[in-house]
Length: 385
Image 1 (cartoon, rainbow, N blue to C red):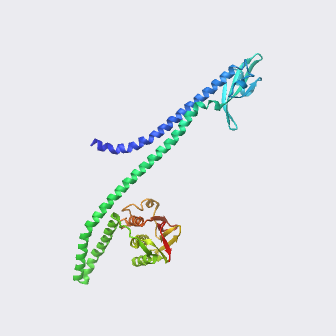
Image 2: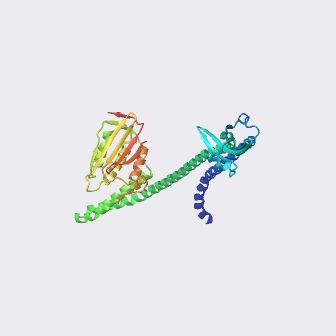
Image 3: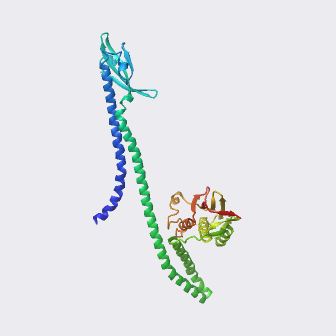
């Protein structure tokens, strides 16, 4: 019992712990690089102090003897900007300056000569101390690259795991849908058959009472068909198909919809399964009709595009209410619907049918209201008749 309760917590904390490892690696590398940067400054100060210690004896030979010495300037007269050094309030002063692309470590150091107090400006090439931070810098770069790759692989693994779980869930839903459809279909057929028989034997007055039963059984039959298609989509049986054949079947199926369906007529043929293609187009056209408000004149347009490098594209466009941004990410989620009635399987089944035909389904919102659904079949052989 304790173990089962801890499992969700472990599943949540484990990715977090794995994600924190590269972060800790980068933080450690940054701190090491900063520490080495401080050591670099200490080293340059030490070098400047060593040079300052030799100013009283061999100032002229220093430029030749010190390869890292980039400049040496002596101040013999008191200057306001260096007053703290002249009056003894400061023992030395350092700063980092950049001349062009060169970085200099500059130290102002007072020293004594026979003539009196002098101040030397010692310019050291800061790159002379880069050996102290080179390994830390390289380690930081490697840590950043490695951590980015680590986090990328972690994100990919988490997405793959989530996708695998979704596919497993979808497979279970498909199996359950197929089982339910088979269990519902037989008693549903019995109910419909006896209702039709009873309607034939009764008079017209009583027959009206049975009409709701028949209409509802028809709706349940459509649900059973959707569940069977979702659970076990049929395999495509391709053959040479004329677009005119699919167009005629679509217009016949949509004749009772009440909306104006405009279907482009083109003399094009290609190899596909016309039954599955027709079912996918009917689903899209029916969805389009149902999205059009009753007070609006409904128009559904079906157009065909083809090209040597485009393959075949069939677009179904409507002037309905479209879909919201919230619903956009759930359009292909099983059993999700924005309508008052319906199973929410239409688009899911349509996408499965399209994939069985080797194509893809795209949905986009139309500016001003409406939806455009496009079935794309790339690299398909087609012929203009």
